[in-house]
Image 1 (cartoon, rainbow, N blue to C red):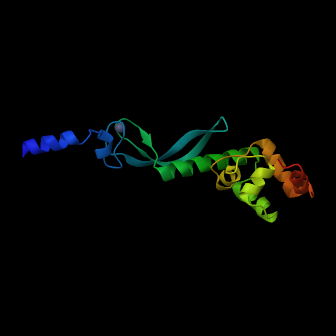
Image 2: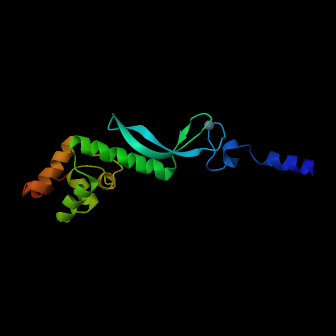
Image 3: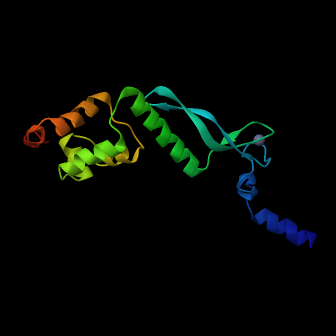
Length: 155
Ligand SMILES: [Zn+2]
């Protein structure tokens, strides 16, 4: 019996993280607790403080861990706060400008000479537009003929 256990163990690579429960601390293995706190993350090179972020915290070594969903929400909240601080268009406002002009995300990206996924990331709040591109989006929204101009000069 013992021998069988030993050989079985030998066949399995010893990866400690793989046998820990989902809510165990990845650093020390202690069970983590749900917590909320102000966490910081950089947006466009600037530190943004997001209040009341749900996460898991290790009571022993103080390690803070976010689930995939928590991390994604945290990043989106940070970008929303950054946009608010600098008066940039929100993802919904960008989508509204695009839809009012009957453009797909890829078509608008091409007119602004951006990568094909850029508009999608702006609209979903996974990335933030620069101030210069924010101005361009406002021109498309407010200045008749600007879209035709961009089409004439499309790459
Ligand atoms: Zn720990």
